[in-house]
Image (cartoon, rainbow, N blue to C red; front, side, top):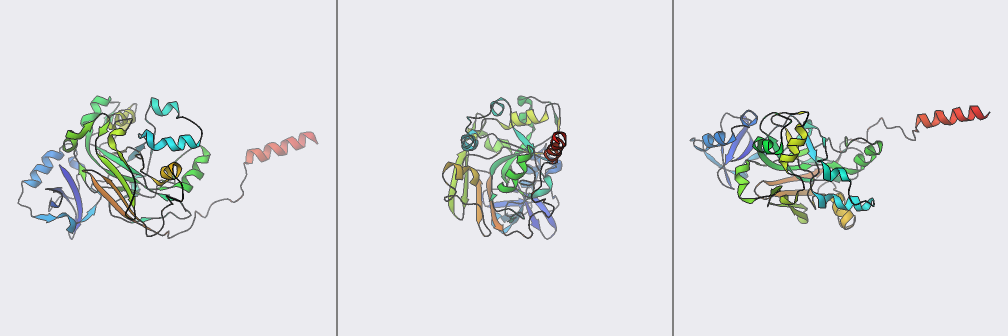
Length: 326
């Protein structure tokens, strides 16, 4: 089944795609969150109803789900290699030993066609094309095999990133935080795994992932090039912990899936940071496309920055040393 959610005069309504151009909307249901363990039954009932079919391009699409949390990983080796090379390393052993990820901000979720505002103080706005998986039920310390049946569906995910804010805060050996928490786009379609079974290949699916800006293709990859599967990510996230039903798991950026990687791989002149007015398109076969326009910032940098601040421990140590010598 392929689910969408649209804005209507009566509020948000979920629907099921009949084909690539037509959907059937429920007149009463506004969310799939309470049906994640029975999406096939839900979709079958909607399609079997007498509800009218509507052209997909006539709908104002919203994000198809409202996840309560988000864990984002980094599973595409070819994406991260340019950054490793820029630091003179072949790749940390930890990356190959276990999935690497972080928590993001569930309050920042956006729809597939929403604009994205450049964060105040940032000059380096970037996109990240990822696959997202929605968890159907609560998980605790499950194996990868056990996690397979807990994936309700997949969707396109864009982890918008302010690279200058991100790099500055991570100098403190923690994060990312403000470089990531302002916007994450989801949609346009939530696709159940059975819809993709015919192209399953190893750790992913043989589906093309493509990025473009202002009509120019930037990069592409195959989902099946992932080093870690979503089953692995769910198992790792749930181990000695709890992953709640409805949670979002992100794959991390695919090869060619962001400006930072492309500028390292080629040059910053060929792949400049996003600017107001840029039109970004991020697509995954069978999952659809996020289409967003970048808008200018409405505010400046955080006003609490301390210009020229020094390490207070360094200052005290220097002062103490001077007293001893005197």
